[in-house]
Figure 1 (cartoon, rainbow, N blue to C red):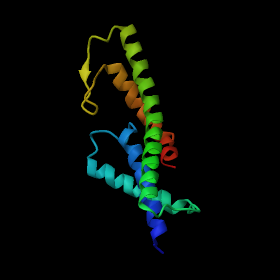
Figure 2: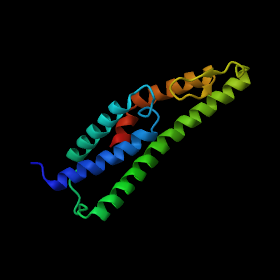
Figure 3: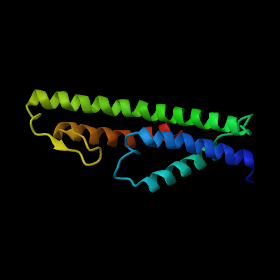
Figure 4: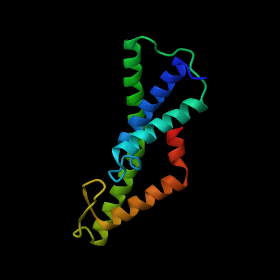
Length: 143
């Protein structure tokens, strides 16, 4: 049964998932169109709001809804930032390895991020993203 409280919980969960997908490295890729990312955020909010129990108080006034929406967006962005921090550590390790091996002169443009990166850093980042998805860490982030 769909009522206003369930709809508000779904909306707030979708806002948190949107904040996560704005910053999180796998989900914020430019290879994924914005409309697909928006649908993924709405679907993630729907799944999360259906799995967890309803909170005791749901905001009903406009001011409380705006404050809750801003807080959920900030929480989602911090969650995405925590995951992004680990990928930046992998990129930094790739840059150090590349400069020690002498491959730092062969820079290339990364089409997904628009940054210039070297081959070792790209390989490590791809491997790190693969480990992130295989280990189920993406499900932990969405949970």
